[in-house]
Image (cartoon, rainbow, N blue to C red):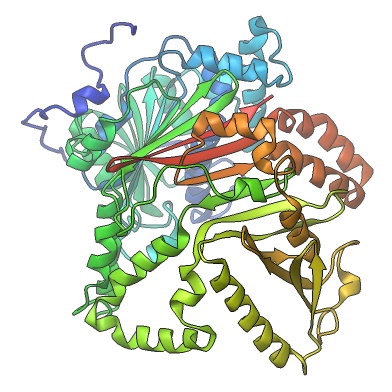
Length: 609
């Protein structure tokens, strides 16, 4: 049940309705009124505006990065506002709800309490602790000039929205969203509860010697003479930052921007049916299609006369929607979107590999039916006449080791796996594959071994085979090769690469001990038998088409002894006191994607304990 909202505020449902007509006509800039002069000792004007822009951006980044902390300080949330200011030119929209709608404030409190984060055991003291921590963060970012409670909280309404448009050129991708000029459109919207205090905050942030204050359609507009493409506006409801065109369009929209009317955005928003702390929607196909046009304009003839870009775009889903919400012991993300159309349909089922990877695995990412999926994708492009010369060369190269099907066709479920040795002194990792055709896997690796043995003989590389409970492990030893300094490796590590294959599993990676640990995994000794992992996987879907797992607690335990021996004692003491207590609650990350007809659903969880 939700509280009544003021009639002038916009909800997601409102944005899906027919837009109002008769948007106000943009007014011309009125007379310019200089803002406060540069403080004594400020250097040239070229540097001052940059500091102002970075100060504004820095505060926004801090707000977004600390949503977990800030959100508790608010009361019942208002309706969504920021999305209503986004123009149709934006391809993606991300929203952080620091006001925490619905059950999210209660869930966040439980998350912090169950994770035993320092200072959050007593629920009655959560708000003061939140404000204290956040004051420290803002004070650090602003070099002691501002605090959250003193400078931001008095005007901030609890919502931040960020829209991202298409860059004007491929070079603009490397320039960043705050690069000089409107090369990479971005619009930031923060809700405002007190316009006067928001104006005071803008005017007092950074060095603003060349910052001019004007009015535009009832908004206070701030524009920097040395960076005219980036402006900031304050209205009664929002603070806007971005390119001049996007900010003015947002002001003119009055909160009824056109992005919410886009069919892809409307379809994405229709899947959002729960309260959230973070939301992101993206027009995936439209954005990549726009990038293809940029490539064509930057390199004429590259895509002309081909169907490569059209073939790729036909596979890509038109949109995706993702929300992040707090549960009692996890931050849970849910992503929804039309399925990729690659020409092969994987089925929701348990992975064939979980019973073949070590129980102490710390990182695991799997995808089902890699061979058939890759074959289907390649077939789409192989069918294009313009790709024939490339694939002729491609096939000729692979023919040396049997051809494409011999190399990839036998791959079934495939996972990237990282696991420490049993004593924890070394870490290994590599690819683990469930062979669809064990004989084909053996032929390929036997062929590769022969080529490596011949080619590496004169380089110092040696090849040896070891029997491991009836399965042959092949080890490539690089320690005698020129340029390899084995003495420089950490204790226990060797310059080697290994592989093995049998009827159940194929494994390739670093090093011999990791390969042996995969061969040793089985009933009672595998990740599939670990009760903690099974419980984590069950909450996101044990039957899936792809899954991933990262054991944060185990990784921290592996890294900390190494860090302690490598850094000064005072640095380690600082870590133990100020950092470790906030890392220790994080337990694991788990994710799975499931097919639901023509739609893919992905669920992930960052758990605490």
